[in-house]
Image (cartoon, rainbow, N blue to C red; front, side):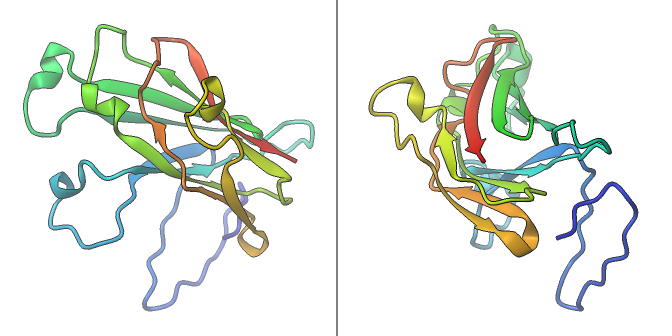
Length: 184
């Protein structure tokens, strides 16, 4: 997948589908592999974060991306009674972090059990030496510190997998928390 801020012509085969994403975006997506009849059937499935950095024109600037995830139960009007959460993800070329962007009085209990199980980072020009799970480093027994990853050189993509990072556990309004660090 080419990564550029310039317009491109991309040929898509008949069996494929083109998806265009603005550089500088982080897209949270439900990470389900089987066929679902509706989004509500997949509401408890894990989240995959797709990071599409924007590369600035000067070599001194690091690629960056941002994105937001809003969660509620998807069925009731309980969000009107503060049963919701919203988090803001940031990528600075090395670190993926999260900030709770709704006041602490908003509490959607299921957001602590909603997991991020994969992160795809596009536009990575060289293979990382390691990927650290900063969430797992916060306390003993919370998971592997060295995250499992593969680097796909032809796509300039880092695929981090087998993660178990809650969307909103121990987050406080306006306080940034590191999730992953990619070491080069």
